[in-house]
Image: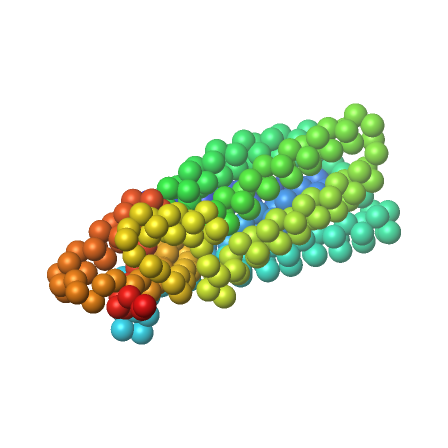
Length: 284
């Protein structure tokens, strides 16, 4: 089992635990903000499951039907997760507004709610940090999306914890649905960032400008002319193709060795990448 899949499984178990904890206290207390966090964790669990299975598929080798591998499964999962988060935010806003209009925002056992939100923030802080670390090591958009969910949970849990403490001190129960709306708006922002990040590679967007420049800098170190440089990314996998011009007097082995050397230099600069070089004779 790969490192990515193992850490994705950790996210599943932590979310299961937190959903049970938040939902129980949410129903017991009648707090819409705690219930909104339970729904948020429910979306996180679904996202973690999608990430887990997409990573297992994305890591499978290329085959006849998918000669470029299965890396884009990570991006597809990221897009799905973004829409799920957006739906969860809409539900939270609807319920919070309904509570404000109806005036039904009486909350019980506030102390227990404060403790649960504090526990949630601590657990998600450590799990999200681990997910981010592995996501950066493996360049995984699916894990990065999952880490982003949990990082947002840290902020929302702390916010609700502070809000519940204020309600406990002041008795202003109306703060509960108001805070829930702010949580939902933060979740909407999260879903937009995730959607933007995950969707771009599905359109075969080129690598970021810094990586493209690194490739160009490597090519400029060789006595070759180059053109039609194209790059793209699928999950953690990078692809590049280019045309280079060489003297027609060179032997085939010399051309082959030069291309191999270029490929190795590029890989040392930006990491694993599949490169396709088309060689042409120098045009006068």
